[in-house]
Length: 125
Image (tube, rainbow, N blue to C red; front, side):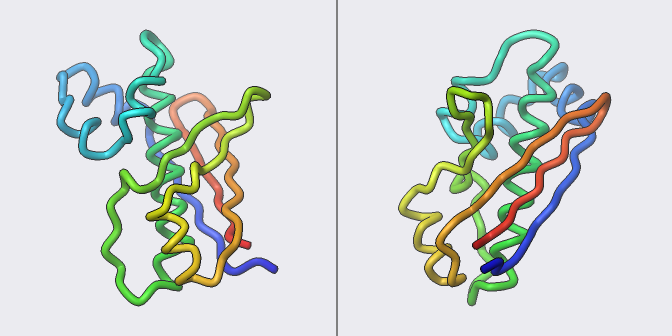
């Protein structure tokens, strides 16, 4: 049964601008160590980060209305890819606790990028 949904869109050039300026603090304070380590170098870096940022926001939008407290550290949400390339949310103990509070057993994630935009869609089941 679907508990809630969340969607977010990110303008990729916004992340490219941060990369160009060397704004490393944003990336350290928003993404997990694993996400930062797996980031590709080169022309796909901004798209990679934009997709992950959209995923974090989509998870927040799906979970927040179902939680008592809306305090949410985006680093709790870690999006990774399976060997087949499909994205998923790594269910950490922190996310598991929020899912239990929200009455959700699964987080389903879809990510897409097209030209200047990255979009993520989340379903809580």
